[in-house]
Image 1: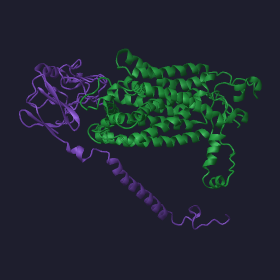
Image 2: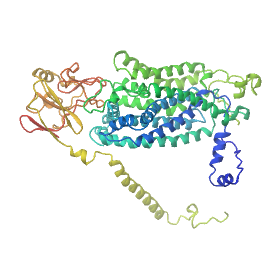
Image 3: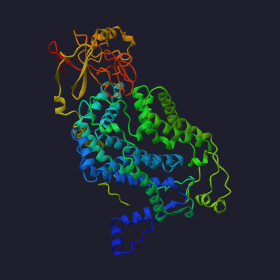
Image 4: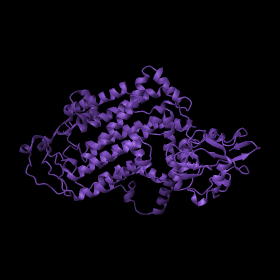
Length: 432
Length: 200
């Protein structure tokens, strides 16, 4: 939130730095005294958790790259060498692999929190779009990282996913094939492909870190949304970020790391596929190719469509439709808590994503295929039908007069006797 | 700012010679764009298959030892090549299929014109109809179909079955059922003797 700076450089060195590159002022204003709504719940702690997970992935990734060999002949063996010979190699690699899963778990919770509380609505559209961009970059990075193991699942995942681009042959004959050979650097997935995926896998996390900085910047312009969706109206509605939310985020991070540590030390391969411990073999396709769990819903959508080109289009649309959510949702009420009809559709959507995840792990035949299509239909209907229509016809519940009132009860609130508003009337903007 | 400096501020310059100024502006811009594109091309083209990948152009195979009903897989340009010595029954089955029953009516044979119809004769080796030589890659998403080994499930049409998404190919390698859009491709090849094939 744009607020007057309260930083007071006290020593000579602080004054000297403040006049040249005022980073201490930035840190003080944005991360110490930053006015934060007083009612944020634990769903708001995942931003901090995600920042921490990105740091874990970058640090473990850099040290793994010191031992990894990105060649078709050397990749698989170098990963096994990391596991068996390199000092603490098992810890570093399992942290990186399980860390990727935990990163996605946190990112999906963070995304659903934004969806539920309407954190994408004005004035936070760019904040939301940057978040979707980070998710896209994460998907690309994770896919490339998985390929580097060069086991059977790695190899065939690369084959299947890069072949998605060959569907462009249906638009302009030859375009898809040319593009796929350009991506491969050959006539099939091979050493050159692995080498370039490694180069890009090293690059993209730093691009993500850059977009994260923009994401935090875009967050600090309007300030945090909150569980009521009501704007901050007075200084009473906020508390300083430090120590209140540094402590809360820190506690949530420790809880999250306990789950991380449990998987890391007791079930490091639970979320992986055993076939990826078989070296890549270009002559034999595994009987059942499945992606990592965090891609399963999108994989189910790809397979629900019988046409190759349209399947690919559906896969891409499933993610990119998120970019348009700020304009698809017509309701001016942010928090789903106050939207009695939308709430049902929202939870049905959450169930749909879980169901697609399950169906993505099953063979696409019979009832699995049928339900895959039903849930794929609802996935898109939620964005294209529910969001625009429900926002227009729904009568929301009465909003609290202010954040303070919602926390302390109606007697403390400044505008306790406010009448409920119809859905389309804008909520008054914050005055803070 | 009462007296704007008309010698340096273009917005207050008299419109004495607009043509010359425009030519320089557009020319400089166009030159920068062309130069940028010329520099970009090597950065993009370096990703295309390099000289060593292109040099793996051909491979020779002795097929004399393959008995009727057997199949082998060889590598060409990193891709599996299916070579199947088909039984009489398999050839007859493939020959009996009407073109109108096919998902993809084009032969996809690199040795024939691009629009050649997908008859069995256009798919099989010339003058050696029992032989079928093709790139063993499912045209859906690039998996290797089952059907080369003796015990493999070969699908409803007796040819090949892709385990990834259930595409089914007949005994001429033509797509009959499932999500794959095209018949499996026939690579460029020549019969160099009665038992030898040169692929590529």
